[in-house]
Length: 248
Image (cartoon, rainbow, N blue to C red):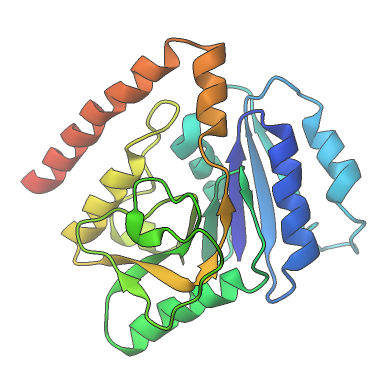
């Protein structure tokens, strides 16, 4: 499993997420790739290495690797950089302000996808539940409340704060997540593109991840007042992309 975590600043949160992953999740093999989206602290990669990267035998990758972009890519662009720099069949996207408290969350998400496959339901991307899942109320759970019945989404959009899929999905739907400036609306375009191919998204109700939410956005708006306007204009890019899908 390739775990891709893009970030811009929020160094304490990145460290908190890494610590929570490495200390609690022992259930299945995974490789974490941090994608630094042109943060101010150019030495953070070395700090991460000193904190978390253990010595590994020759020929083996460390469990945590660090990639830095020298220009601002935004959430989707940073994810794409990480995606193209990794190769494991399964990928998990996570926001940098998540905290892992459920050591089996990845196994639960994978099991949900497997169950849907056995049932012949074309759910190809799954999210965990969270105290703060963004606009998807169906994914909301204040605490780690586990349910036996997973949720298949209709017109709702899966929250990308913690989402898992097979790498081949993007080949089938015609490309990766859109690199809209900064962030916003790339999840809606992705969901629409999946539905246009007859694929569904779902929520694993046995998986739970704490999500602080909005910290990077708040930082951006305070440091660059024009960023909010740019992000709001991403809606126009999303609508145009969805219209193009409809014309194909």
